[in-house]
Length: 286
Image (cartoon, rainbow, N blue to C red; front, side, top):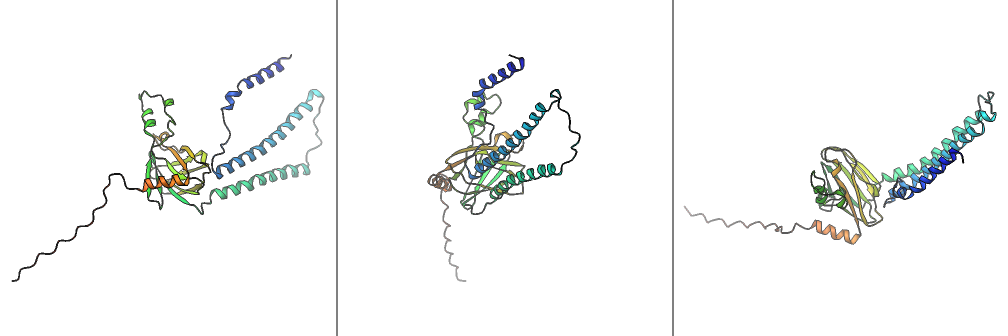
């Protein structure tokens, strides 16, 4: 067996041995749990497929030409053909058709991504160094969300805690954002100090939080569960310690959570009624 063939077989054997490791190395775009994320996944796979077909056709023709028309096989260059109008038309029209085929669904998806009409719930998200503030508009609910205590303790220098022993290390918070399933949620994103970015991959949404400016986006989660993200804009020393957690609950569980957030704090005394004015003392006659 020739040396090149031995090298080829050795390379193939090494790829087979790395199969289990490659199985856990997921490089593809995640499908997510929203219509937007799944539509982005479908577009990604469509355009990737088109690019693969083009690559196979182009590189296949190149390799075939290099092998079949090499000088050692007696091939000689054709010096007579210097221009072909037909060839120029073909290699101009075909790319235009391909670009149109890719542009139509992409434009349709972009229009849908920006359509926040008919939202059923609106939440204002404000980024701070280094926490998030959630304000459920017209629901009288607002709170801060910061890194959970166990992750915060483990991240400290000389804490002696193995980060691998902390569940969802640097991806858990004390107060997650809670939304109902199958509900169109409009998210208004801004910042109170520097640039931040609100990003949850499973929801398929990401927006910059800019001081003095409000960006908007929307999502509708199709599954109940907990989905995690992070600030995606370098915002200072503790940029890596302001995660995002979104809990998607059933409508009944969401309403129960909402009521607990709307109740007055435990032990808070009701406001006292205003005291009645004391009757004026009679004025003595002169």
